[in-house]
Length: 194
Image 1 (cartoon, rainbow, N blue to C red):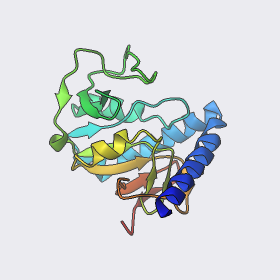
Image 2 (spheres, rainbow, N blue to C red):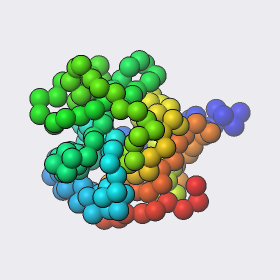
Image 3 (cartoon, one colour):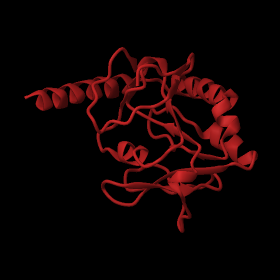
């Protein structure tokens, strides 16, 4: 019975978070993205990372494109999700943000042929989510790609979100992978209580 309640609670919270994000204005997303990227670029985690894995934003997600641009300019290795099946993604090398094709979900991705980046070489992971709690709990979009990927990667996990998608509590189960810090347009928080 408890599993069913947890599943229903997760569905409810995910729906609320998606409804919240769906009405974000373009200007809010742009401003929040700019502020988030500035905080990431000023962080020790970014400065010390040689290999950065992050996502290519979709719809009203906070964009980390400016982080990628600076990382590439500095000669860092940048990798993004490469969907290999309905349940698995790998890290694909990204050389540029220009002329990126769309994957099966309509999300920008690395052009073929891809060069895969070994998960154990990744220093910093920029993790998207439908929402987060300050304790580092993450609500994904429901497919489980990131939870499975994060279970295999050892880099520093930095959740990327905005103030409006922070929640006091996020329901989690044993498969949900937490983040170690969170960045929003106003905060850079090291998560406690993981």
